[in-house]
Image 1 (cartoon, helix red, strand yellow):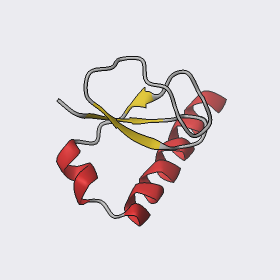
Image 2: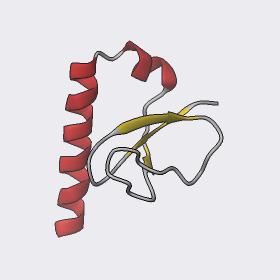
Image 3: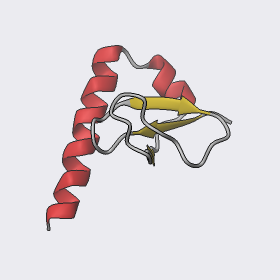
Amino acid sequence: MMKIYICPKCGWLRMVSRRKIVDCFQCQNPQMTLTNLTLARYSDMSQEERDSYSEAWRYIHNRKGSN
C-alpha cells in the first residue's frame, strides 16, 4: 500500500510503499511524517494543489508546536 509522507522542515511530499522511517531527499531530514492523503487523492492533485497542501500542513503543525 502506498503512503504519502511530508517533511515537517521543508514540506516536500513523497510516496512510499513499505518504509516506516522515511528520509527527505530535499533537506536531508531523517524522519518525514505520514499524512492523511490517500494515493488516489494525491494522484489527482495538481502540483499547485500539492504545494498548497504542504504549506497549509506546515502552518497548522508549526502552530501546534508553538502553543
